[in-house]
Image (cartoon, rainbow over all chains, first blue to last red; front, side):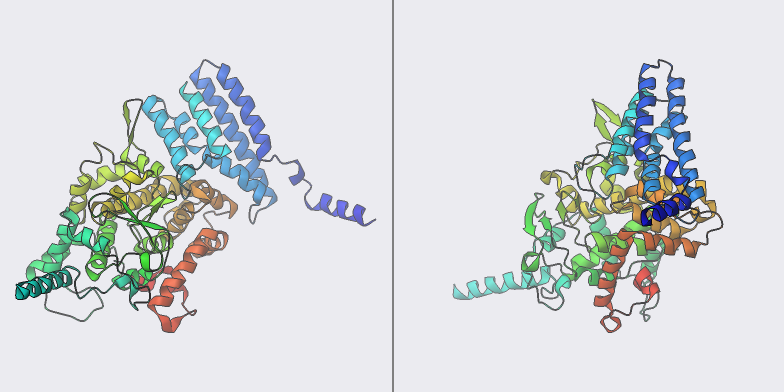
Length: 140
Length: 376
């Protein structure tokens, strides 16, 4: 009886949060979009695929915010960290010029940001590695 | 013969006493409990012929007019001109020497390096193995930190010296000679931010850093506070300095002359880059009014230097649901409440204040913890 009551309570408290995407969902989403981008020869279409990921991340974050208007939780934080780690890739995507120097600068922005406040030689986070992969694809 | 020997010993004694100034009081060990004897840092500074140390000696010879709040002494006309020139960006308050001295009483431990002959010589920075910093060295440190703050502030939103004080107090307690894999020098720089300021070579091609404009601005600045730094850094844009990741390069970042000057410029330079080009645009997107509030911006930037990093600081803006209706005061206290790094910084600021104002121990008000008591 107690279990049923608890389940019902949880069901009524956070009905829509249960359906919201988490960081792992975006790893899958990002991988699918990257695979498409790898096969795409048109640079502009690769940009569109990254923008699709951005829109999806933002949409989910907005949903989290709607559910929790006062402050965000850990799941939301993981997604927003991924979104903001991708910033140098988004900036690069928005630029017309994507030469070797600009691509390297975007990659360096990811590394510098990821390592700030950490020890020399610290391994990059999964978010940063995925961002570098996107930059590589944009610059292909 | 015996008289000559006595005279020689006396001369050596007098020479040493003069060289280390006012006997050999170690400012970083005011009560003498640590029994510091290592004079390598003081010796290395005395040997310096760098522009910043020369500028310091010139100002020392012509003592500047009194800082605000002190009792008046006679001001020399030339000195006044020099001071006015130095502080032409004079809306920027200076960090008080007493606060740097209080911070130096803290013991951050770790390893330090002296660069007496340009080579890094390791020492343990704890207990009696730590180096003695005499009054001249500490006066120079105070001079260098305030000069760098005035210089980097030129032409942009000024650096808040309270934040610089809190950040340095947290990271090295002004032990500018600390170096280890966690960072080198006064601001604990690691290779990536250095690459982002100085640029670097990849596959034979020079890549300009995302923050190189900070050094370029400095080189183009007409602010007299930048003059000495220009001399020291003029080659850095052509030939980037070696990164601090390897021990052999430590002196580039920790020697009391060029190393300290370089670390200050790169450290503060990267700070304004993170503040203006990373955090501010993210804040502008959500809460443009808050983006123009220096304190909110500084608190978020300081948070970016903690384990959460810049991405964490940007996430915080969303997590805390900042908008254009959020009052700056509310935003500041929410950031303080959410940031473990800011809390640890504040704890170390409390330690500094306990040393500075022992009668106020554990009773320091909000204003003092913000650093208000440490700027003039």
